[in-house]
Length: 139
View 1 (cartoon, rainbow, N blue to C red):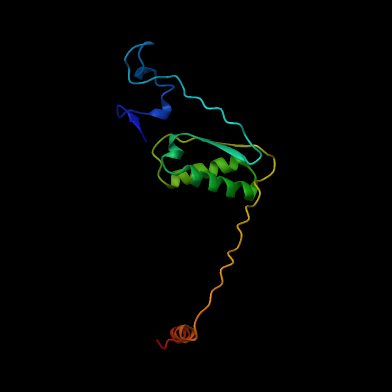
View 2: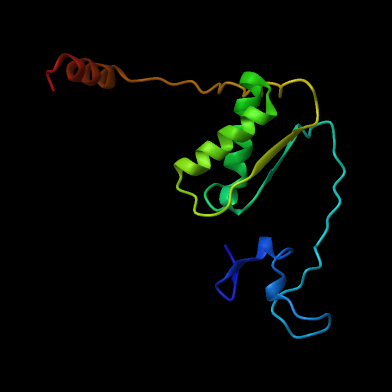
């Protein structure tokens, strides 16, 4: 986590007025947010909004994977948010902790089917005998 003067996480910069000076002054903090607009697609299932206490202890991908599994089980975004908070607490988060899940569909996320590998495996007669001996304790 990047900090400003070892006092303030940059993500919290919007409310800490004592760190800001008058407009145009040379202070270390700017309160103008950086905004980004993203168009949602049919593939977008949910949004996770969390503060430093969540992101300090888990990656975005872990949070998405965990939220997806939870939503597939019970399709309850509030309960899913609580589970992410519990996981962050288990990981000893040391910062404030808020999580909000916003689902873009009333349906639970669909199961993602991972195709089975079509790799053929074989073992030689000698390898089979060695394996049999090892399993029988005759190594």
